[in-house]
Image 1 (cartoon, rainbow, N blue to C red):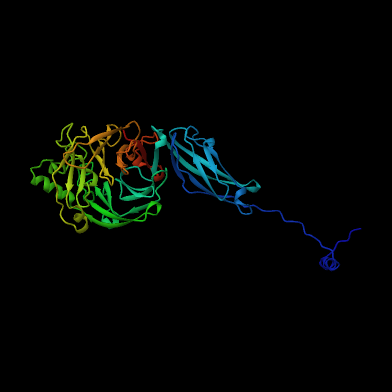
Image 2: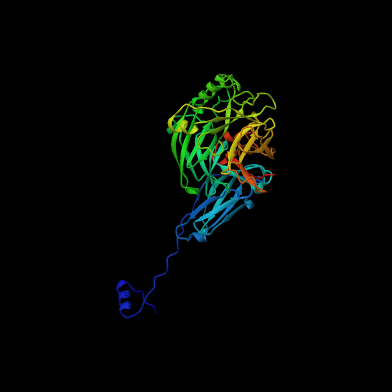
Length: 456
């Protein structure tokens, strides 16, 4: 017959060499935790390398590798269903990617299942834009849609400006993703409204930026748009940093005074008058900035409007600023060389960029279109007044967004040279809901498309 033992009896057994083992306690698992690196995500039908979301999971009492992550529901499977969501990784941080089926929006329920039958969920709000031509050559820079100027800063990265705000954004040139880093120099510029940045170029470690210098779309003068400024670059690639330099806020006034003194050849006074919209054939709107061949002092201002003369089929206009370095470094009044008029088939300048060999690419487009409704083309030029540019490519116009910026210029003498361009997609209805991209509620859904083209 077995005898029940108290504490004293147990002690006696230990002394006698007998060991008694207490029954093991059952493991208690907590409720799993789940977090998303972004609650909103944008993709595109047929896209290559769409952005991913990091999913961070955990559960007390369990190793993270024991947890599973999946999509458990979709509010609109025609955009993306649960089977279109893939999750990779085995640790506490997983990577979630979505393959779009169709254009539109869906809410995806992301579920982590832990031990003990416990689970938790988060909602990922997903938006998919339509398929584009040559999707393998397309990527998407998210966070803003009105890309307007770009400068390559080395290491595979570019700084991109937006004409709806004064934020400069650093992107990996080859990936669809949000910006790596951002800078807003509004306070240093002394402005609260957009400068309407439209052109940029890099000399040494200094980036020169220009506003459009024109009226706003309602024909009103807005002082912040009459701004050119510099930033200083340090580092490269993902480690790039920008520091504010100096600004000048009278370049438009100098241009008008120069043109008036020369017989109003280009109609700058009329184009900047109250009530005059900038994007008309006889308007006033700067969109390109680049230095003259071999120069660090003379800069070319490329005009979207006016044409010269201001009639259909007129030539595109460049005005050289012969002391641009001093304009920015010391606030010296701008001086100008003779206007350069280029035959771009009736198109105007939307961007101008050169390489170290003084080979120029001009991105030509309509003075009017904010989207892809009119032709766009790329022209090669040598930067010399009186020398004619040569068309290198007609650009596709079937997809959303207007071609707006050249990232850099390859060696144009090499067969099969490829150039990267960026769209301004602010007026595009990306997701089929009738909302312009610039007006979307969530910045993660705003995006500009970048694409590579092979030059003929």
